[in-house]
Amino acid sequence: MKKLLLLMLTTILLVSCNNKKAGKVEKVESDPVTCQLLVINETGQDMKANATFCIDKVNCDYIIKAGDSLLMQSNTHGGGGTVFTFFPLGPVGCDPVNGTAQQTYDYWSGAGHITSDFVNNNSNPTPEAHFSGQHWEFTLVYKNKGNVMTEEVTVTVGKCDMEEIK
Image 1 (cartoon, rainbow, N blue to C red):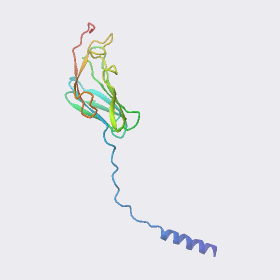
Image 2 (image 1 turned 30 degrees about the vertical axis):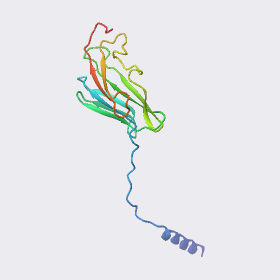
Image 3 (image 1 turned 90 degrees about the vertical axis):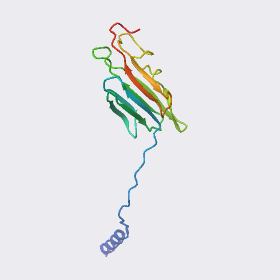
Image 4 (image 1 turned 135 degrees about the vertical axis):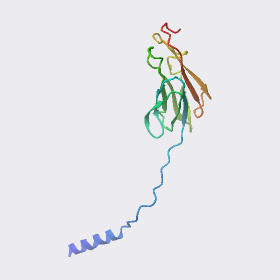
């Protein structure tokens, strides 16, 4: 009798479960972009780039082809922010092999902010940050400098000068 009662109870539970087919799945939208930078590569060589946080993921690596551009974007809303970095190659046979340019962003009060620009981050070798043993420089030309959503930077590379640039 107990087995029959258990069987009936189990049957009732199974039948009473509402086994509806899954409805249309809604697409989950991404957070809006909080900062972006258009990098224009006029160095004559392909250039690597990285965003520590891009759109919905961390550590994005890019190649910006010579003569091309890349819109680097991040939608981070956390306190860690993001760093956009690119690595211009020097003239062939010149030291150092590549340079480093980076700009740091963070997010607060509902908006993205530049917390450390290319100069403050000692991007080099540039006219602003040049060290012993560096025999070339890259130059950054800005449009809308300091605007976290519309800033553009054009990267060019100077000639190799085996006599140290001063």
